[in-house]
Amino acid sequence: MKLADNKATLSFSNGSPSIEMPVYSGSVGPDVIDIRKLYGQSGMFTYDPGFLSTASCQSGITFIDGDKGELLYRGYPIEQLASHGDFLDTCYLLLKGDLPNTEESASFHKLVNNHTMVNEQMQFFLRGFRRDAHPMAVLTGLVGALSAFYHDSTDINNPKHREISAIRLIAKMPTLVAMAYKYGVGQPFQYPQNNLSYSGNFLRMMFGVPCEEYKVNPVLERALDRIFILHADHEQNASTSTVRLCGSSGTNPFAAIAAGVACLWGPAHGGANEACLKMLGDIQKMGGIAKVGEFMEQVKDKNSGVKLMGFGHRVYKNYDPRAKLMQETCNEVLAELGLENDPLFQLAKALEKIALEDEYFVSRKLYPNVDFYSGIVLSAIGIPVNLFTGIFSLARTVGWIAQWNEMISDPEYKIGRPRQLYTGATRREIKA
Ligand code: ACO
Image 1: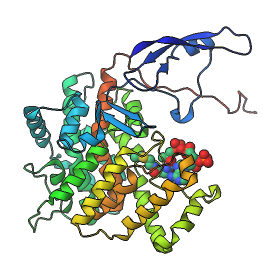
Image 2 (image 1 turned 90 degrees about the vertical axis):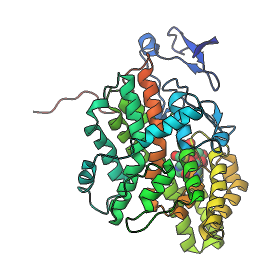
Image 3 (image 1 turned 30 degrees about the vertical axis):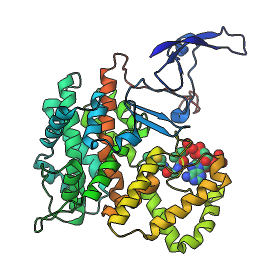
Image 4 (image 1 turned 60 degrees about the vertical axis):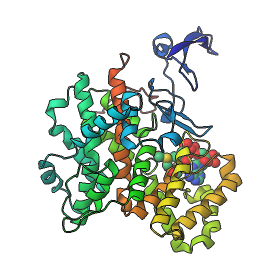
């Protein structure tokens, strides 16, 4: 970051001396006012619940222009990355800052492939869970448990340790997600098969069984790979900020990523595609497309508590660029599986059409987000609804670990410690 030409001056109506604060510019996007000395100079904090106006860090990984509907990883538009290379090339880009050349790509793929297995002991740990446990509860536990297996790589001040932890996490997440699924359905775990692609291997671990040969469908393989690319990073969202805050205490990366998984589980964040598919199912039960108008009236009624899931975004006030790509993938997958007339897809299209023209949504700049179509794609592939957020965690792991690594390498990094505006009881004494 560099100092901008102008400075900010904060003045007070009670005659207290005004305070001058430096302003910094990034490479693109809004400038920031540096308030680090504000408390020392004024005895006041800033108040910003939900961090709507706060830049918590400087970062060179992902940039979003919410008004334009633009998403860049290390400067490259998501539309280009979605059709260039595969997910592991995107992982390389996010971790290292540039796309790999052919040799770098091959050796990175080999490195990740060499770490896909998990310690056999992990199976016994998994068996402690009830079979009907939610896969996100299982996954939070399994990811946290990884720190109990890799004592050799948890020195966060050692860049080699950080790198190997990143590779282990990216490589083992598909294995853990598939194990959580297989455990729930009572089928034997499938060991990874490293001659398959990252997403092909995941499909096989999910849907393969020992008594039959599993053939990877290239259309579904490509669709899953695209889902992973689109979800790989999204700057300082709730789960990434959670990983940074958790990691800022110096805890090991597996523990920090487990915190990210836990945060992602919430319906306003990673749980949205699950909620969106449920909403489509509910409208279907109400009577399908014929009831879309009635449902929209509920959405617009503030007292109903009903939201159009998969619509709206804290940052995008335009079409989420990932939603367009996901709609394309949705068409491809449904055509491949002969599900073009799938009623939920038709319903989603009808809802989207109405919402894009309706004054309520237009005036509030509410557009479809990536989750509006991803649930339909995942469900067509055969992924159960309660595993959707697990798939998102798998994809976002690279973003979390790249952001965590960037934070640890930043000389300005400090333990995160927000302050508060206290509104509780003032000091009082217990009566004898
Ligand atoms: N349906 C109906 N109304 C909505 C919706 C929606 N999906 N989203 C926002 N609004 C309305 C709000 O009620 C509010 O109306 P008001 O100004 O009359 O009070 C206005 O639009 C602004 O909404 P906010 O809640 O202030 O917007 P915010 O940026 O805080 O929320 C959020 C963003 C949480 C994503 C919200 O749009 C939402 O709940 N959407 C549905 C859930 C969803 O799809 N989440 C996925 C996010 S993407 C991801 O995590 C990968």
